[in-house]
Length: 173
Picture (cartoon, rainbow, N blue to C red):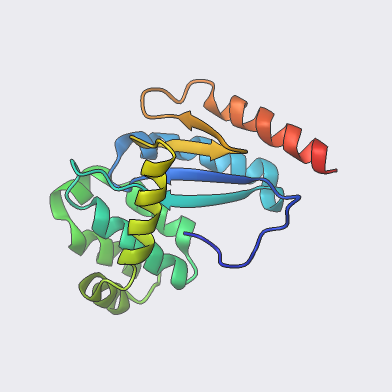
């Protein structure tokens, strides 16, 4: 989910390469929430899609997340779907549409977006960029050009990210 408006150069960017059918990404949500709470608008946190082939509903979930962004509830949708990873594995696209309805989004538009593929290019572009910079699994974080892989363990990652962001904010102050 990329905001097309240019960010102020004084605001560091944290790209979170994520997959919505990934239990590790669900577990990483606490760190992402904490970072968003700590920095607010002083840090741009961007969800980047990296659907893995081993998860058959991940590509559709990434497209659905883009539709949620268009309808104004990107992070709420991402958190809701990640909270139901096992159910997504069993139910697939019907769950994606159901979650949209539960959040008050236009579920019919979600269904249409999944059928017409209007967000495929965004997901494909994210995945290609991720591969180009060495992302191999999720979650993976990139801040100030440094890639931090969180798939095996989240241990200490938030602190490392905070250290980088704090340094960038101090340099730009």
